[in-house]
Image (cartoon, rainbow, N blue to C red; front, top):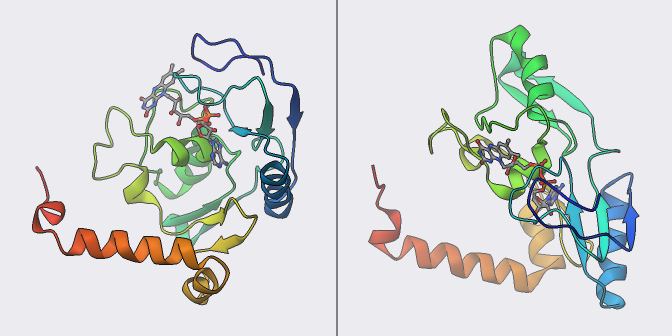
Length: 186
Ligand SMILES: Cc1cc2nc3c(=O)[nH]c(=O)nc-3n(C[C@H](O)[C@H](O)[C@H](O)COP(=O)(O)OP(=O)(O)OC[C@H]3O[C@@H](n4cnc5c(N)ncnc54)[C@H](O)[C@@H]3O)c2cc1C
């Protein structure tokens, strides 16, 4: 746990292995109350040291390995600790695969792929992580858990996290109000 695939060597003071989103939320709340920094780590294949720390490391791989194929292989609901190879092995029976194809697919996980917006040699921008995701279960710094697929996701975010909700609306409107931001670059 003292190194990822980068050249940094940082030995964490503690490694925490939460078992669910509620525990991740509790960790985030406690770290902010005690002013401690948390670093998340999944497959640990990052190349720039972003999954290593000398402080508290939160392992979101070990206990987050559930995977459910939906809609005859057109969708997959997957927890962040599952590797890209494991997802594709399950989808192969449906002749499907996920969009991002990082060369580290045997070891990197969905959590790390999403957080890094990873791509690969073949997916381009059409099938990268951003284009592949339909919804996310997010644990916010306050500990609030939002499932963006839930019908009340928007009202829950507005009620529980008004600053984040307002900020997102401002960003949305800034993009919509700027023709250059909306132009698709080929
Ligand atoms: C040999 C090799 C080949 C590679 N090829 C490619 C490539 O072709 N394309 C490419 O894009 N990258 C590539 N990479 C880089 C790396 O593998 C990818 O970025 C990969 O997606 C990281 O996934 P991971 O599970 O290892 O994440 P980690 O390294 O564990 O974490 C990545 C980041 O995500 C954060 N994180 C992890 N899990 C969560 C979570 N559940 N919630 C919130 N944040 C989280 C971590 O804090 C960290 O900042 C390669 C790396 C190697 C070693």
